[in-house]
Length: 117
Image: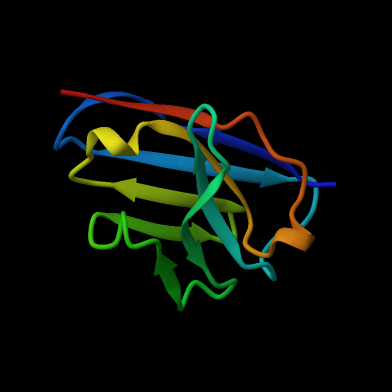
């Protein structure tokens, strides 16, 4: 089983930036497509950004396109999310996991991102 640990969240003002990190341990993950998701209280977890296992292809939800950048380092078993021009609506707990829902590992604790005005 893979253990996912997200970090890098915090409190930031509107327009600010944060870089989230996700480490995957327990099993080699270089062959898996990965993604970032986020969740706010009372809502379902939603897709934010995805990256192919090679790192050559990425995609984003419309709400973050042009502001967020996902990347990965397979040698370090890390996935990153660079978040720029943060908006109030980006406030959420952010998680990483495998992209495909049926194949997802146990969720980590996530990292809280709070954007203030």
